[in-house]
Amino acid sequence: MHFTVCYHHSDFVIINKPAGISVHKDEQAVGLTEQIATQLGVEQVWLVHRLDKVTSGLLILALNKETAAYFYNLFINHKIQKTYWALSNQKPKKKQGRVVGDMQKSRNGAWKLCHTKENPAVTLFQSYSLEPNLRHFVLQPKTGKTHQLRVAMKSLGSPILGDELYSGEKSDRVYLHAYQLAFEYQQQSFVISADPETGNLWQKIVS
Image 1 (cartoon, rainbow, N blue to C red):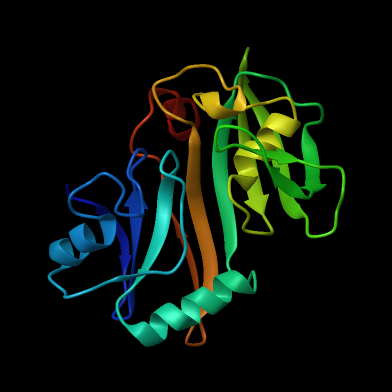
Image 2: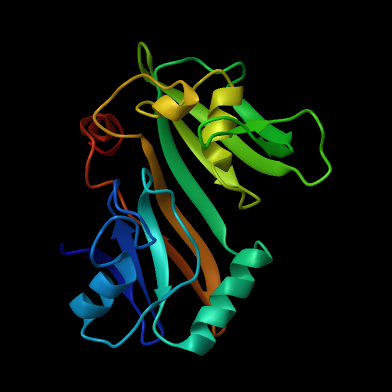
């Protein structure tokens, strides 16, 4: 498989990960990092953050250990601004705002949002109507919890289209995409964005 490289720096690359590809080795004989290393003609690349298998979009891979450590710290300290796109066919309880709450493991590998706020997941969101029964959400996670955005969307009453684990309606894919990353590296500011490559309904936004 050939991956779209959105930005190539001497110390890192940013790819547009397709939906349905795991960042871990999973059941594939050759894992994502090995595939990208082969594509780039390098010995190894380092994974510095993760996207769910069902989520597409921007993924940073370091090309050396020092850069991997630097980006890992950026993510741990929330120094990278992440913007995601999502689609839902359900109207949210409110059109914009914040979703804040602790997250707890639920059934079947799912998570749930709690009323407590001891170590909360924090998500900013705005939503726009594209047509009847189709809304575009712009999501900015301020923390990096597992399934955070998928849980936040369900809590708003707007589960992501295709995300059946969280009560989303069946679709051709899970409509969640890591659209933009903004960060600083070696005194230089980077803002990288990439449109989704699969999913018919995204055309309502990018056309």
